[in-house]
Length: 390
Image (tube, rainbow, N blue to C red; front, side, top):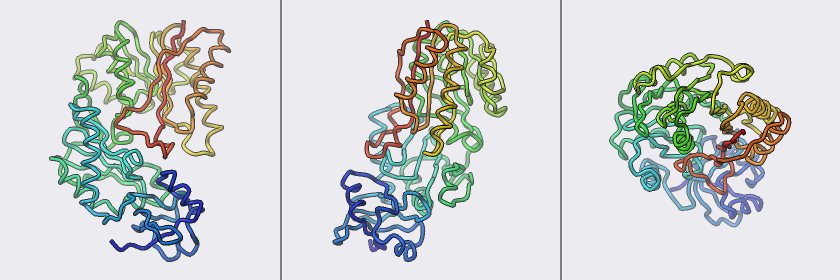
């Protein structure tokens, strides 16, 4: 297909040969001229200075990464292109989770589709588009999904703040079919209510699947305190594993009321107590528990936030170690910028300051349907530590 061409300079070629998918303006030859000639959001052919074809992608001079690679092959970016990509991604999910009805189908660069996330909840697909280039493919994506699977509805959950970086409007809409605002699904024999229109992200955090399963395996007869609980994913896995009681802390009335409904439909109404408020404040005088879960939102979203964000994580983990007299602390971070080594250092310093003994008995990461692209470090973002405090 004939698309406008963009040339990579020597620096860009080096990144290309290292299998990177994203390129900054510093890696585009004659960028100032290019941005005047090629409209933002355009599909482009990517070539070398000596006109050797490198691939096909999309361009947005307003983004930090102005150029994103979709394929190294000569291709027409259309409905059929996305259908093939979705089918290939599904093959992997069938290997990873052969019997699951809820899974992440597309994880951006992890599935070589920068700027696109798709979660499947039974017969409903929830789509997040984060870049201008991918927004231009919206109709192709919807059309491919309709052909790809027998879906009842396709929801565009395009309310992520990441879209603002690309000058995109925020919106949520049902692009195809019909759906309720809150849907009922079952995962690991637990019934969940997923707020696909009003909830956080796509409505549920599928990336914590394996970490929840580990919690379920060790929670029997324990009391759980679930900080930043949202709708209670960790708590309900713990209760499925035989936990005695779960306290859920969150600032959202909506999330906590939904958690109470989930508790009812699973028969755990008397084992769940919701607590609206600030986690750090509640940890100053917390209910007694054997397991404390701290799974906060991302405190570090950009490079410039690292120093302030690390301080927030440090305070949170310290508060957790202090609050738990004895038992298991599960500390998580979904910030790519917070490395696992730094998390361990924070936990070690907290134990030392509080004169407590603790050992790390668990390392947790994102579920494998959120594959890590080794050439895009940001795709490895979710980390967790399980600390046994003696």
